[in-house]
Image 1 (cartoon, one colour):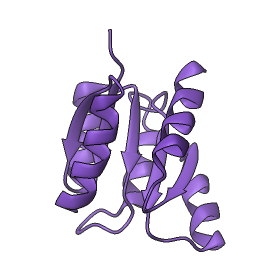
Image 2 (cartoon, rainbow, N blue to C red):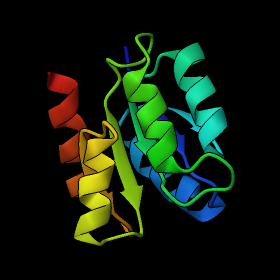
Image 3 (spheres, one colour):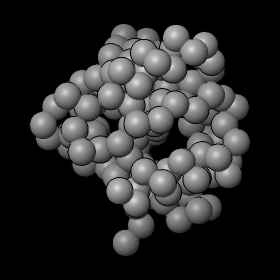
Image 4 (cartoon, rainbow, N blue to C red):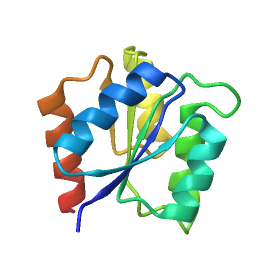
Length: 122
């Protein structure tokens, strides 16, 4: 059974790039275009992993990551923040919100896949 990855990103371009990478590597892709929908989808669908953008309208990725990682229903789901924000302070803050890893865009495909596989092994 293929692993299910929820992509939360408001950019159609990023969504397309990430979806292509995941699908060609055998993952089932679920999508949400903002933080609130991402949190709702994580609760409803219980994906194996979440790729979370940070800069989105409404609930941002840091807030959505915190909600997913602090909720008993979804706390077991690893969240990888995938963002253009590449400051060390952003990375630290993201990990503090409960993210398991932090990748900057544009993502390197092999790096992304290695990170996902590493987290799904646990």
